[in-house]
Image (cartoon, rainbow, N blue to C red; front, side):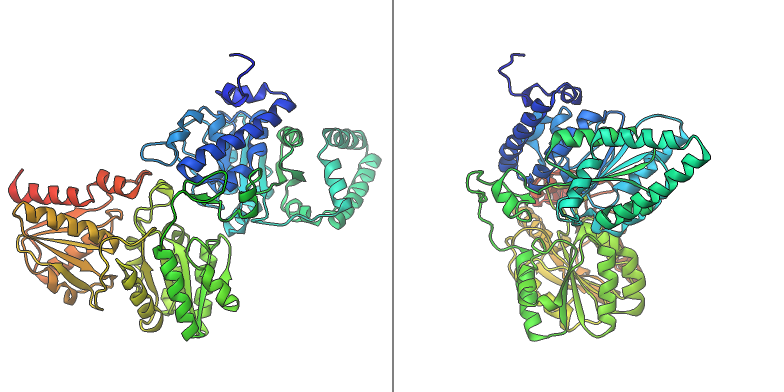
Length: 622
């Protein structure tokens, strides 16, 4: 290797980071930002959050060995720099693509990824479990939880912090405070004392001071008295530290999250402690890229964009999320009982227009879906109409509240379940493949499945103003496809008549069902296509469109256990009209990898070609 190489090009392993001096580490941070901009602008991905943790990640790898030490990410979209420093830089051209590099920590990719992290607020709990296992097994390694970027708004974070602080287990919690979780106390004296307390010399002096005084009873009493005075002053001047120290943590910070030398020193100090430590790091989300610093929310997750202008390469049209937001805003103008709830996904769920039009009726509760559902129950109990817009994979955290707080009392809470079905590049942690199964289990729940913008508007009005009890409307990420119609209010609608077989589906996957019928027709096979407008409740009276044909294929992009196809099969059998052959086409029993939705449909045999091939083989024997 020649000296003319960029520093980043010489990093093949985290051990190479440890060999850098402070100046080289600072240069590496600048190169990493250029690398992130170049890669993410081409592939899309999470940008602002990764730009914000460059120095922090470099400092972590200067101090710790993540092949043995356990680094647990919270909100794992902060892991890009970590991946680039742990031997995966050359794979970034495949970031978030089919069979490519994941945008989240994945232990199957590298020994440096300690735990899968795609959702939020669990890192302290997971890290504490690892620390307790380490102690139980009498091993010696360090455990870190990197939390923040909104994760601290989730209640699970505080459950973990409460237990970890009391546990006395050696554990380091790094709080990446980028303004998305808590605000640090600022001021001249606070900054001065924080700077003093992060100096290695200060901590060495504090250690010698304690050792010198605690060798005698008199010295111990003097040390305890001086400690009480110190605690009083710290609580007065550094109030942000007291919550964590009252939980049992040694608090360090706030630390400048963009000073790699200072971060390295602080983490080295934290490494030497044998107790719970919380390192409070102040960072700027989007650091180093002006567009991302000015609009961190817009650059949180991006599609391919032009680095010079910050503008996306492809202009996005209307989406199910935007149509939902517009329709709900229109409904709210008609009925002042309607309010909207978001769990830190205001723009992603299309609620920005509502928030601007009706700020007094809009509530963003942070990353706390369980709280959002319970709060919605309270709103509904008092006569208002709450609409909670939430991604399918995140609604999973509110399941208990759906049962206990909403359904048990039959309350009229409307769930706008965004990102239903396969979502693409975010992969296993974000696919909405479970809500058709668990929502149908909830007594009194109605689940509607629009397949067009017109149906979304119509079903939303019905859900909000006409249906009693809990209602969910599930719709996918992205825009409208070929099917543009608007079906009536019945549970099922026949879209295509045929006599040899019947394809049943719901949501936008109905487009693939119609494609399959066209392909089969060209091959001389007559297929009927039946669209489910509602997947719960379903009764025997809803089955009339399924009476024809001896072969029934149910097409859906959810997991097999408890899928709609299984429930339909049971209903048909109970009604005495079960088909001779039943084929369930779904995402199977495993988690689905990342990739574009068309790629995943094809890989799972859920696209029109796959469905047609399956039916042709069954009906013609080849």
